[in-house]
Image (cartoon, rainbow, N blue to C red; front, side):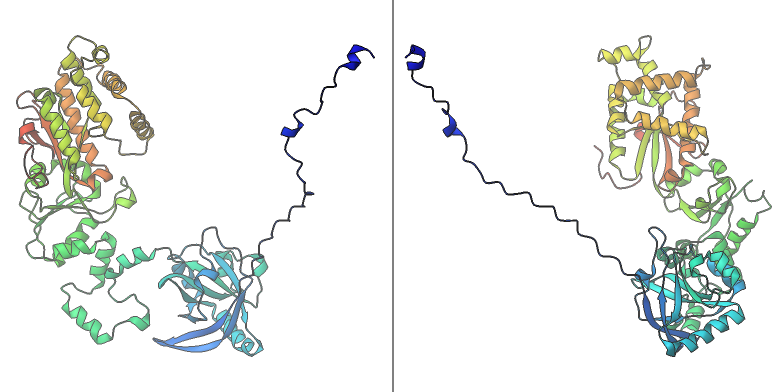
Length: 541
């Protein structure tokens, strides 16, 4: 036998013991078909219909069925949500001519539904009612309640009334000349807005069954110091007087003054809204003592806000008289309608900014004041980019500020750190209109949010060079005038006007010539003279 064949055979199955034992594999199981969702049932409502015949009394008409409801508006009300009772109570019947008056208080229709008799015994009564509405060219309604709040009306009208069918845009599939249709129409006002206005009404606006007896209502009227006359209620509604002002001005010893020049008449002639306000204040027994006298309330026509800085001693009044209230009133074509009406402005606190000389005069003290203002819930402080650039020029002299910053030798890096930390705002007042400049201002402010200290310094220098490229001499005075303009323009912004009272410029004790005294409604104080005029900080740090 050849030697190669005489050699022992190799075990070709060596290592097979390490393999796992065979596992039985089940045949694949067919996947279960997806479970179909429940097919939603079509909405249908069945219940009794009552017709109100007099206050607190209703008569049964018949049983009806509402069906074939149209698709509701997205995120809108639907019958299935707000029609959960087993009966409806129809209120007053209106003619077609009153339809548009009713719809002025309502939102667009959310859903339609057909209305028919529940069974043959109800058909005759419903047919007679539909015929009556058709002949009288009328419609009726029921109030729909959700969570104990009236949210909508259920309008009922015959489809033969072409005006209503066209105005409400009834779908073609519901059109049947002999049918009665229901429309779900929500109120335009929310319940909260409606409730806030209830006090203006000369009579109860609650449903008739909840009205107080006539004797009680007469007693309430007699106890009121205000006349229940059409003139008085017209004044309240046109001026949109809040209840808080009514209570405040009706208290004894409430002298006031008016500021309306060139917005609602020219002195001594007064415009319509100012005359209405005077009528209201006369009824409250308040006295107009003029703009130079000591008063408890200053009323500013909304169109005259831009000139309010001319009011005598405005800064002193806001500083020394925390009990003095300021109100705007009226309407104006240059003011957004959401600012019309009577509203209180300049309530508490204030806004502070700094001149370059004030910061240089006491750098550490300035930083400490900025930190205290940041802690105070009623105060804010900011600085103009041109002021930061001026500070860089004054402290760096002939050297490049950015170079010194990179070398760690910039004197006012602490100021930049306060801006980055959000304790001090870097901004300029936005424009008061919705022009391209306003969009640019928003974009610029958003860019500042992503900047570090060095980029902020660079941006301030660039902005100041563009702004004062033509100003060589008296640069310090030009920046001080910019501070005054900007601070007043800032408080003309609704967000600031509604939250803050005082305007304060922290100046140096000697070198700020423009801010030698209070001017244009701005307090001009040195660092040591600044006072919050409250007890938030009980002791000086």
